[in-house]
Amino acid sequence: MSSPLLSVRDLEIAFRIGDSDVPVVRDLSFDVHHGETLGIVGESGCGKSITALSLMGLIPTPPGRISRGQILFQGEDLVQAGETRLRQIRGREISMVFQEPMTSLNPVFTIGEQIAETVRAHFSVSRREARDRAIEMLRLVEIPAAEKRVDNYPHQLSGGMRQRVMIAIALACEPKLLIADEPTTALDVTVQAQIFDLFLNLQQKTKAAIILITHDIGAVAEMTDRVMVMYAGRKIEEAPVDDFINRPMHPYARGLISCIPRLSADPSNEPEPLFEIPGVVPGARQLGAAGCAFAPRCANVLERCREDTPALEMKREAHPVACWNNVEYPA
Amino acid sequence: MNSKAAPDQTSPPLIAEPTSPTRQAWLMFRGNLSAMAGLVILLLILFVAILGPSLYPVSPTEMVWMPLTPPGASEYWLGTDYIGRDILAGLINGGRVTIAIGLAAASITFVIGVTIGALAGFYGGWVDNLLMRVTEFFQVLPNLLFAMIVVMLFSASLTNVAIAIGIVSWTATARLTRAEFMRIREMEYVKAERAIGARNRRLIWSVILPNAAPPLVVVSALSTGSAILFEAGLSFLGLSDPNAMSWGRMIGDNRPYILDSWWGVTFPGVAIFLTVLAICLVGDGLNDAFNPKLRQR
Image (tube, rainbow over all chains, first blue to last red):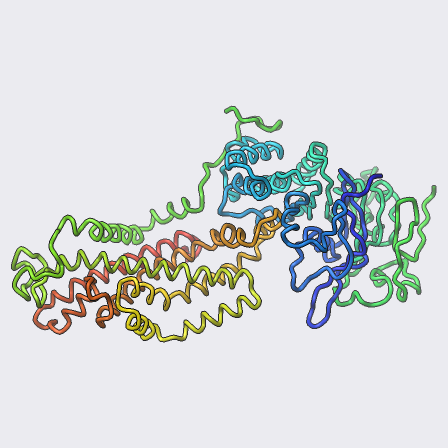
């Protein structure tokens, strides 16, 4: 494969809490190739969103900062890049769709103005052209009667419509990488499906790479090419999506997949009790401790897990896992 | 309808007419009786102040009739003052000066207050610290005394009076702006704007400020009212432009003769009262229009 579009190397993000720097993301490396969709999954608080923000240089500083590592975007290290350069990249090369469509649009401007203004921030075009582009983008995200809707204010749109507008804004400058941070969490299930369809369609049209951050394994299975599982600020498993769904290796990843409710083939069967992973994600302060961060919640915990932090190890082809256990699947 | 409908669309979509927040506020405002009354009074006063001098061309500074003529006793309806100047002409011409100073001082208040509050609220940290200490310094100055000193040091021209009033009154606007900026700065849409590559300058002036506008508009309306009162106070003390007739100066000039001519101080007093009342009604109406929820209590 050609050189990756985005290559994150040994990224460490630290937050200043009191007098000490607490790393909330550590030793994180991953690649995103052109036109590919990478899913990042994990529970709330395991560093997914902060990783996404770091890619755009949007970590709130202080208290947060990138304390180590590189973010190579088309070979350019964004960690070293200045604010001016980052501003050129934001929205133009890399853009982001946020979780909350209800609050992510500015209430005092029409949606057309907000799309147009993204275009005008990066290209020298007239107001007229920018407005035409806004209408074109609204059509692209399948908003009916785009030439009328363009003059609507955000409060006149439903949540699903607003998320479509957010996607239109994100794609207005044809970025090479789109980061979607739980884009459907705030939407109801049918609208979620529509938005995912829209993402797939748009990806075919624009050839943009997508990083999809979610805790919806169903969305991962449908949308992504590759999956990365994060736990307590570390990558603990990465695999092509089919391999991941069928043969998850890390006990946490297996737990995540077991948590999905399943339909029984025989309706007369008693439904199995829904699986859950006991405990909660450790807080940032507990992260410094030795051993695997998942050990306190792990069913297969070994003596070793509490002392040594497992490193990522290629357990299968293109399937690194950080776990001392060895899970065998029949070939 | 020539719009391209989505495949599952069976009927043409119902689309609400775009109603901008400004228009919604106007609709609320229009339904508010006291606010509309205030607006009508204010427009009348403005009309008189702007067109009055050409419709009623009597000099406010020249002796036109016997001194201390009561209202209704001559062709000068509201009577004359202690040196025979026409009170009505004074009201009309003084209105111009009073309102002009009120607006000028409120604009200065707005510009200084919003700039300082916006920078402090947006950047936070040491910028906030520094600017808020400066604000506190101006807050603890005795307003009237400071304005009097400014006017005395730099001659009592109308410009200087407006500047003096502006300088002593911007602190409340700055604090309000700062609070609004600190609140709105954390909103998702500001983060989203940043993610599309917006500069700080744009975030401050084009993203956050329009969202912070409603309370600032209200406070500016009210600060026009207090600037008018402040000017009246200064000219009552004889510290306003000696060449310009204003309502406060009329009251100040006629004060020694209050027992012989009640009309000399009453009419300008009523004019000040009505103007400030109208401004306050409009300000309250704007407040209700921007915050319909608060009004329902």
